[in-house]
Image (tube, rainbow, N blue to C red; front, side, top):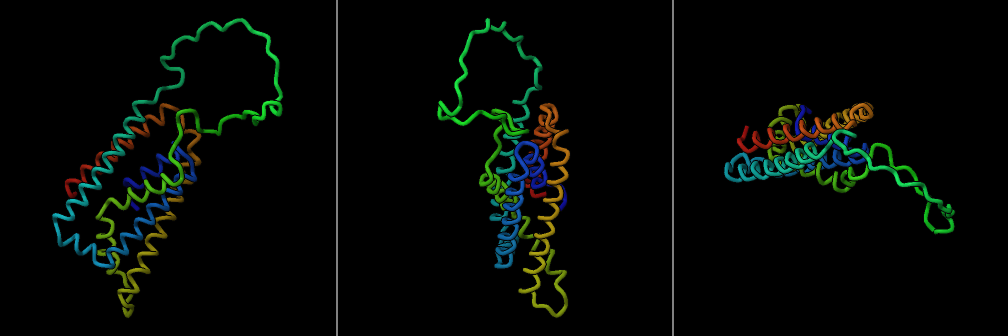
Length: 224
């Protein structure tokens, strides 16, 4: 539950997408954690811990994923411009021409409405399915998650309870607390979002996201 790539991704999705999209990513992260816990219980975590070469391959794959997201965030940051900053002066408006209003029902087209709040042209975020996949990949690409769960949770199995029962129960509690934390964080960011969605703040947020993903990619690749 400490700040890491998962929390950074959730924050970025709330600001650049929506609460629904961020929730899908959070569910993907928890699903990946559950899969890693299951594989760890099945012995994969012990296999990775005993096979430095295989573990290094998983680490490098995760580092590549994080580095790719860092590049995408950096491109978003450098592609944003402040509204009205450096924009050329508008050309003189042509003289008004007489037009005839055509009722919407006559054209067969629905009346045009305003765009959804907080989402402009060219700022379409990922879909719910894509966000779920991103969350799944963000947590699932880090092999340390399963190893941590299998090394951490058995210490807290109550006396007299079989480990094959106690560890899955503790893993479920851990993942439920993780989901609760992510949902709480999303709500907090969502409340602050109206004050954080200016082009300048979004550019800073994307830049910080790129830095964090890049640092975690290097750390994962080096085995830190």
